[in-house]
Image (cartoon, rainbow, N blue to C red; front, side, top):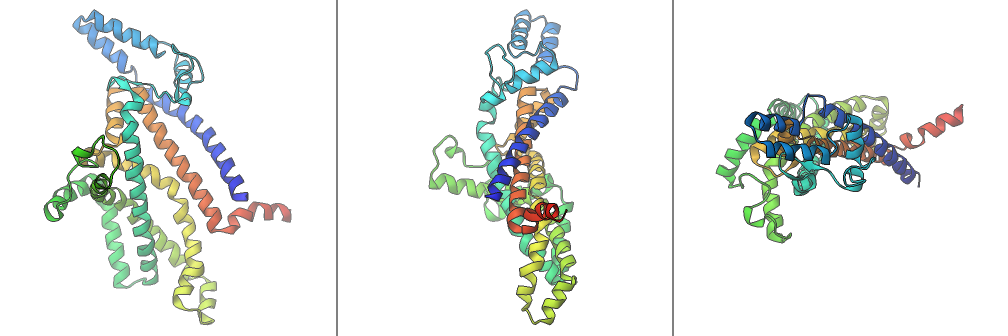
Amino acid sequence: MEILRFAFFRLLSMLATLLLVSALIFFIINLPPGDYLSNQIAELRATGQAAGVANAEFLRQEYSLDKSLPHQYLVWMGLLPGSHGFSGILQGDFGWSFEFDQPVADVVGQAMWMTILVNLVALLFVYIVALPLGVLAAAKSRTWVDYSTSLVGYLGLATPNFLLALILFYYGHRLFDLPIGGLMAPEFEGEPMSFAKLKSVLLHLIIPTFVIGTAGAAAMMQRLRANMLDELHKPYVTTAEAKGLPARARLIKYPLRVALNPFVADIGNLIPSLVSGSVLVSVVLGLQTIGPALLAALKSQDQFLAGFVLLFVAALTLLGTVISDVLLMLLDPRIRYGARAGTNRS
């Protein structure tokens, strides 16, 4: 019950934080002078297209872009009525993409789920790779195993994602006949899920997962190795060794559990780094994620599309933080009862 209560209050604080973040995102996006429609109106007036100017002016009024910035934000969030009443983010209306000339929900609909899928698989890849290699490097410290894993880690950190994507893009197809580009074969796009479509998606995920997750796995591995080495040199490990506790139990029972705390706490920081790192990779590999849409929206000052995508990434970050906090409570009881114990002592 305590964990459920904690998770509930953390979710409430996440929603309050997300509301504050949404305001920051909206105002920062609008810091550069002008917007998509203003730039379009200037171009149309320069070419003498009066009908186009009238249409753009109508759109400015339709989406309250002729109002003050705070008023625009409140309408975008659905806290103030616009031309269609209360219709904003809170009501499920994400706005209109002027760049793609369609609702934002239609632009990012499938791309949003593809982004979640790609980054969830990359997150699993990070932990599946980093956990055993980090523990192995600490257990075999200053041996060829440690040096080899460290070399792999440094290469993963030093190699730019887009360069690694280009290399694997070429050699993955040439040597292993892995599919090139996209997240599924063209014949499965728009089709209901089936075993053949799932197989195609999994095959297409191999290279993006490796590219996006490599740097995160390398950093996690080095961090876990350092935490494990710090714990393995503490007196309680020496005492366990003197009592004849087997090496594997001596490694896993306490040092690993303590060393996992920062490892788990990094989930909230890892998610935004994976999403931001996947933008260029998505462009290079032709992935149908929100990365290319965000890039196009920022270049054209398409504020509703850019604002929603950034808000979506912020929501993933905060959700990852909540998950990491709950997992830390399950992993380390001291986190759960620490504040209560301190109150009792006082």
